[in-house]
Image 1 (cartoon, one colour):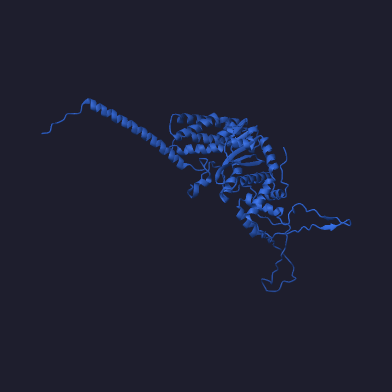
Image 2 (image 1 turned 90 degrees about the horizontal axis):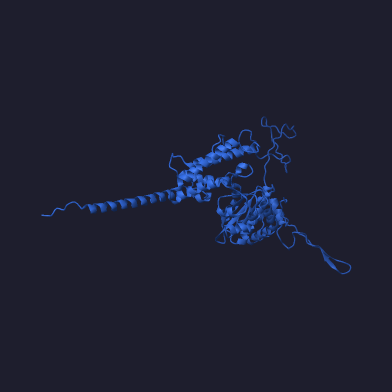
Length: 474
């Protein structure tokens, strides 16, 4: 018969309990790490252009339904009451008039020739006439003097070669290539099909390079004007050049735009641009660290970036739970509304009591956020804690727009620099750094001219004639 064994001794049971407790502790730690990792991955999946710095082009065809950070105003969409609409208006003096006579009476069928005119209904059609290139031949006459000396007339400006394209043709080429982002091949094809002008892609490149070569004095003037301004925005974006990643840097005001391409993104490129190192006004930018190393006495950090980051925190919060990021975003939006209202009514300052109340709500929210996320580990919580601490420590830099003289965001700079991304999206990367520099110079010229109310084509004709438009010195 088998021998019955008694219960295991106490020491064995105690060791087993200790082992199981350790395994349970390890399992709980692994589960906590797994939950943090899952939360981080879910947060990444929820990222989109409305709650992060991802560009709209990154969404692809599966982008979610649009959701704006703006709050509802209660107004109906479209033109508001009292808004004066605009439509195509008839010209007072048309270029050509065509009379259409009725053939016979609609009632009795009698002829109407010579009968009195009782009314004229005017209908106008706006169209382009057939367009073809006009060739002007300059004949340089040579005459012989009685002394035997032969003298030939000097060639006029713009006719230096036996055959060449005029300034308006060159302006169209640069407008399509650098202004509307067509590739060299498509620009040449457009000139051939629209105007019957045969061009090669090499000619497009040569005309563009010639135009950009006339802008050195212009870019210097714009650089000086931005450096001397009270408020200026700064931003940068990636740009593919010669198969490698380069960076387009932008400095702008409401009147000037300067774009520059550089192989580097950071301080080396900022110094090469030559504005921020000596800038003494308010620098509007995102919270990217290299901008803070410059000598600008005051900074305005972009509130639009902050609102997107706060939206990401709100999206990651449990449903129905109070979130510090929601309160901070609502207070920041309310402060911007107060500033806009004060500006629209031409007040010297926003309502001080209402503004102070929103500042208190903003401050209490970011303090709560910094406290709630301080003791929690994991990349996602660390990111949220860094945001709360930045909003807390740099509150003055985020709320400097309440002085009514500084924009609350850097959207203007992002609009100016977006042209580089559009160029890359339409035509692909630029093949050489020299071509990228030419593109940035011409875009700076066109953007600045548009801000001063000058038509882009007129500005390009002046540039093609070798006398680019220049902004007045301050």
